Image (cartoon, rainbow, N blue to C red; front, side):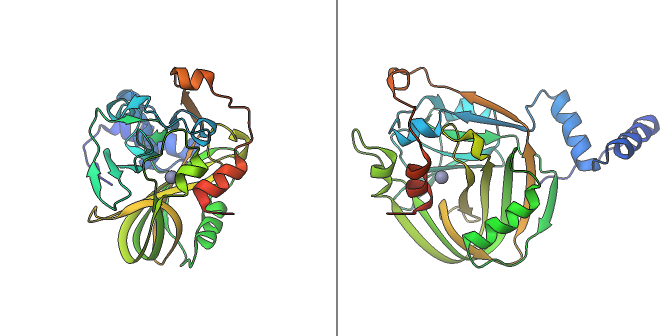
Length: 278
Ligand SMILES: [Zn+2]
């Protein structure tokens, strides 16, 4: 993360100290929020394109461009037109991870059917206890949240002793998410220096979001990555931000307008996104 050093007036400094005392917030967060306000950046806002229900039903046609997503966040995850791989956005760089294992910078003109992004401004950072599995990792993340009822963005960085991820491959015509992810690519890796970008979504957003933890990873050398199915690591640094504002951009495509989105997405998402019950 970049560090800001600058001179300010004594009166501004006094006012900042008072605001810190009054609110109990740290200086990093107060200054970041003030800057975001002044520069008219959304902050604490999750911006989502389309719904999990639409994805489950196989609505994989792109509806917004990467360039448009960039206006709403510098950090996030998603997929590309036709379910052509996994998206990860980190520090304003948007990457496309494809099922042949290759990674490229996404073009601003590329179309996206589903994504979640935010202007990431972590409230706190800490080093996690060692974890041997996704379940052990998410148990630690759960303890840091303090509530089930907000969204959270997390960044996890360091050396992962093992990583198991998947990369969606282009969906065939009329395939649902469960059918399309049945032919996904999976990768097992050891000792990877990398960063995980992820979100916690409350269960009450079922049908719109993907409830629970959803994590994508990219290696520091930008050679490997995907949607995380399992991982282990020690000395991993966690940065966490609660998000209390949610914006949903609904597609206006004929497919979206005509889709039946009334179904229960839970079982399909468990199979497609967590690899359970195949
Ligand atoms: Zn994913």
